[in-house]
Amino acid sequence: MPDRCVAYGCGKSWEDGVTLYNFPNNDTEEFQKWEKQVQRTRSNWTASPNSQLCCEHFGKECFENKPYPVLKALAAKGQLKLKYGAVPTVFIRPPCTSCEGFGCNVCTPKAQRRGTLDRGTLPKRPASRSHLFTVDVETNRPVGSPFSPCHIVAATGNFDWGAYLEKAGSLAASVACFRHAPLCAQWDDITVRLKVEVLNTSAILPSKVYWIASIIQLAGYKARLRYEGFEEDSSQDFWCSLGSGDMYPIGWCAMTGKLLVPPQAVHQNISDWKEYLMNRLVGARTLPVDFYMKLAESMKCPFRTGMRVEVVDRTLVSQTRLAVVDTVTGGRLRLVYEDGEQEAKGEPLSDVWCHMWSPLLHPVGWSSKVGHVIKLADVDHPTFRKVYCDSVPMLFKKPRTVYMEGGFFEVGMKLEAINPVNLGNICVATIHKVMIERILILGCNAVIFELILSMYT
Image 1 (cartoon, rainbow, N blue to C red):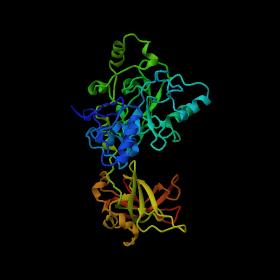
Image 2: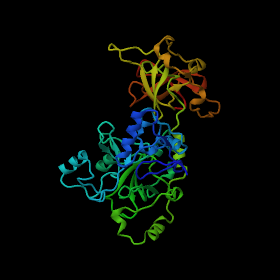
Image 3: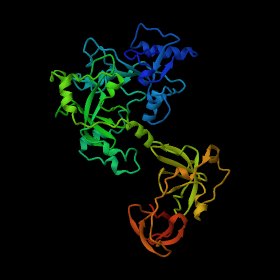
Image 4: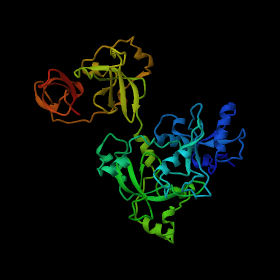
């Protein structure tokens, strides 16, 4: 019999694709914190040295800063590690006998009830996933309602694309428009009317249940979903990110033993749900089974913090400089020049952001190989202290081969190029130098300096 999570309404084991954590027996204070958190939904329960909690009861901040699909894959393998001092905060709320889960003075926290009463009456339907909540360890009060494993819903103060697009009526650019974006090559598989299985947020049950929804609108990685059974009624539509890991292909519940339960609002309208779903799902498309595997692969970044690279000098674009990768965010790199000067206030001046596939980025040694000017760096600069290794050519995107039938650019030729002073303009340029690997040095006629340009950009 496998060990199971002791949280109310959970009971998951490693067979359910989660990582289990033993209570911190070597730290009495931490042990009591965990026990107290569980007791908020199991008042008469007492922890034992063998008690365990699964990863679904910990917020995103308790784990390594990695993409959600990667965290989910680690959790399924039982390899998801907690940070030191992590405390469980995400729990299922027991059903309220007074209001059946719709929210009342008995079950609704004061902080949430105050905002509701200011507007008049309590909502007819929970605006969020009210059967789950987080507990603030410092104040011991419910403060939110995240629902996905190892993930906390973004703070309400953050920009909400779904609400903005609905209000403005704007059209979002498709992921397929961006060749460098994750899942661009697979985006043809994601279409409107695609059927998925998602969490049923209106169910009043002690455990999670799911239902089928259709994609009504796509906006980048965001999808507006509508539960099956609502037909043309858009009042219960909600937005979900395709990268959140909260949408599953049809059949996922059957494979994992999860329950499919229709929302309460439409439960009474259809007598035979089995026949209804059979008719709705015939010929329907769903997510590819390897969707999240492809997502994780497409989000991999070969660059790591501390790697040294050569990048175009933003203060003099006709030369390159050595830089160190300081931050990696969504495939974008923050590069700190190794010989970065200091402003008067002591703040670092020389840093630049670029995409990992940018033609402005090169491996160490590239400038000397092609014969390009590179600014000499101070080897004693403090930046070197956090350098782990030099980047190698295999990390960079290989340029495509172009056959020009014997012809090529020559010094003195005229062409059009982006004005490096005003990136919104095109200017007349002159080829000053042609280097190996088909790299050109251009001089813009409108400005008095040169810029480096690959013929493949």
